[in-house]
Amino acid sequence: MSNSVAIVEPPIVVFDGSFEGWLTAVFAVYENHWQHAQIISIIAEHDFLPNLWQTTFVVKSDVDKAKRVSHKLKSVFGNNGFRQLLWAFLSEQPTVYGHLFGVVRYQLACPDVNVWQDYTHTDVMPVLKLIKMVGRERHRMQAFVRFEHMEQDVYFARVEPDFNVLPLLSNHFKNRYADQSWAIFDVKRGYGIFYDKDDPNAEVQLITDVDENALVRPHDFHSEYEKKYQHLWQKYFTHVTIKERKNPKLHIQYLPRRYWKYLTEKNLF
Image 1 (tube, rainbow, N blue to C red):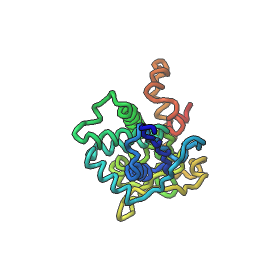
Image 2: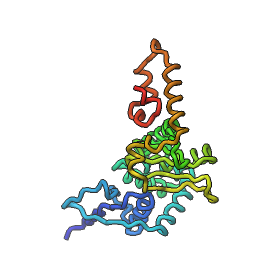
Image 3: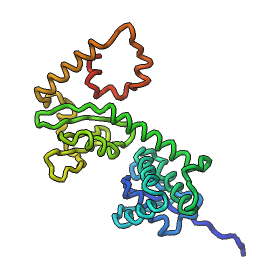
Image 4: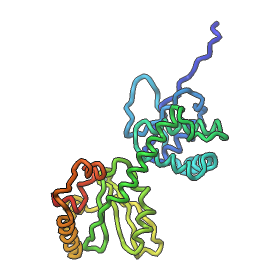
């Protein structure tokens, strides 16, 4: 009789793509004692491609389990470290969910180690790179969002960020424009955030139901104030431009073309 011990490969853990779903997936891995396997595959359902060689374990988001995991992660990573996990998650890269689990497993196994400083770890470095990329995109969105005043007295902006940074913009714009009603809609992901200055609770809300015409032809809904403002802004932009000093290469370096689509001043060109 052979003395070798059969190693049972854990299934691919598939979750619904939400952060709560990923936290529930982490709970499921430890609940089923799969954390000791060398490779743990955690995949969002929109990235999952079934295969014949590996079984799957589908996780449904569970608020209670997600809260238990987030509470534990905050205790070992601290609030800042937990925020870094969220930032990396918002990158939506197909491999990030497995790397995040690797970082979590490493930190739980070595609670006295600052895992973020272990640049040689196979999971830490990819996560750190994604955190940096998401942070850069968040910063750019704070600068490149262009609100347009609508007839309904709401300032409306369309964006298409590379990463899902909308949840990271709420506090910035709420603090900056607390006396105005505004909405920012992520056209690529089909959802937005809305702040109502007349709401006594004054909390930023998620929105998904937006008039399709407002996304395609927002100028049809512009207030008279917005029409005059855009005309003045474009006129100002034209007059301050010194043609002899134009440097398109440097300009694109600081303002990549992918952000031009919704910039009022770029409608000139």
